[in-house]
Image (cartoon, rainbow, N blue to C red; front, side, top):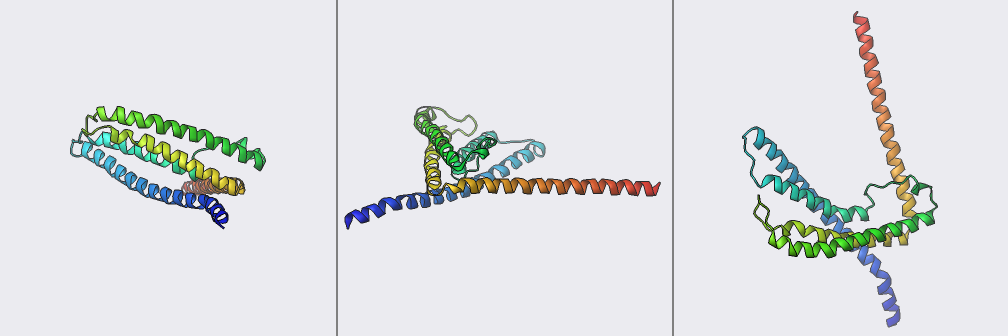
Amino acid sequence: MNGDSSGRSVRNIPDWYLHAVDRIASAIWTLSIGLMVFLVLLVFGRVVGRYVFDFVPIWAPELSRFLAIWISLLLAGVLIYENNHLNVTILYRKLPLKWKEIMAYVHLALISVVGLIFTYYGYFFAFEQGTRSVAPGMRIDLIYVYIIVPISGVLIVVCSIARAIEINRDPDILEAQEREFEKQRLADEQRKAEAERERVEATESAAQHVEEGE
């Protein structure tokens, strides 16, 4: 009885893990959107301040850079989990599903190694250098900026593992995502073709009106 219960608990670990990663990803998206909105408002305020009031707070450019760094590194792991990073797939698309699965595991393993490097060296760098350095504009310890590097590393590893679990459960998602990307590409091409056709028709119509006027 205890053996069966233990076995079920082990099998349920991926479910719990994926559910946790889903919630973390959702929270990171919410936080990143909030930071992005604040960043846009901050940059807009800098432009208005410079060209209208001829004044920009000394801390504003620094804060803009720090926010951009945090947003980029926060989303790095989430985009791995959602497979939304830029990919070169010219050769990948021609492989059979089994080889795609193998390549995906190798890819995720290499990314996890990078995440571990971020975590290990980023931690020591943040606490050794960040506590001894101060941002000249904001006058804050740079540990508050550097700490995002090990946080990002942890997220990269966690999200890579979650992605590997999803692929292991259903390798067909690799093909499904390829089909979805191809569908989006064709839709984009169709929209561009329609826009080009409308532009040509508008040009021809304008030329016709000019000829009639003459």
